[in-house]
Each structure stands twice: as structure tokens, then as C-alpha cells.
Image (cartoon, rainbow, N blue to C red):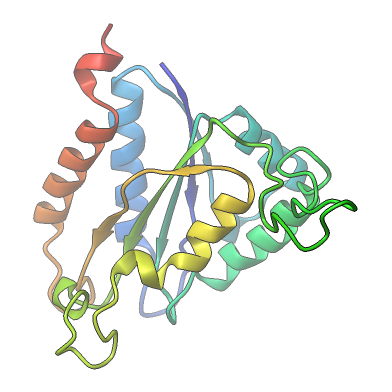
Length: 201
């Protein structure tokens, strides 16, 4: 079994109170608990202790970041969490500086992470439809993938030497939500990454 740390990065707004993100977190946690994993939770918008959050990252075999894409990035309370927790963790617990050395001050930037052996998974909700990505005829994203859009989040994790797992996304949730289909895809996604048959042994 493994240790899984789930961060619910939703920030409540009048038009998006967070029910879907909370339901996805609950479903992920229920699946992982049922299959024998130890699970911890954090919700930055409700407050957090920086030292405990660093410890949670060190404890975890996998960090799952659940959040809605908000203005092409993460919600502000999750960004604040990253600013505070990640900066404090640069004392060697999450990374030892930025990876450069006195001997090679121009090389290996971003490669000082100390969380090697830790995986991470992004799970996100979007207003954009899936068809807006990977299609050069769609002028806004102009052919990029969702992971291209989320590259800053991936690079933050890489800065700490965490390794990516496949991203999950629930698309078009504001105008054409299909929650049951999203849940079915989520279950399939989780079973591929954390197979129940493996956890049972």
C-alpha cells in the first residue's frame, strides 16, 4: 500500500462553490482507502499549517492536486499555498536550493529536488470543452494540450523531483456538465494508476 496526499485546490466563488471538485476528491479518497492506501487531505482555501503541509509532501508516495483551471492557472488560494509551502520547503526538505552549484552556477537549474520517488497527479475541472485542445483550427489554444496549459504546475512538481502520473480532467463543467460520465472516466483512470487487484495483495 502507499501514502496518498490529496490537495483540494478549489477556491469558492459565487459562480463556482466547489461541489464538483469536492465530489471528485471524495471519490478519489474513497477509492484509494477502499483499495488499502493511506490518505491525507488538505484544502488550502480553508487554511493550513505550513510545517504540516511540508511533512505531508515528505510522507506521501503520491501527491494528487485537484483544482479547477482558473484564468489559465490554479486558483489564488492554491497559488498562495504553493508560495508559502514550497518556499519553506526549499530548506532541504522538498529541495536543496535550485539545483545549481558554485562550481557550475549556470547548469542544472531546477534540479535540486529532494522528493525523488514521489509521484504526482493533476486532476482538474475546466469550463473549456475537450475539443478546444489539440486542434489547430481552434484559435484560442491553437493546438496545445491540457498538459501544455498546465506546464507551470508540472514544472513546480519537477522542481521538487516529483514524477508525473497521467492527468485527469473533467471538461466543459460550466455549460455541459456530464458528472456521471466524468466519474466513470475517473474510476477508470484511478484503476489504471492504482489497480485494485494490486492493492488487494
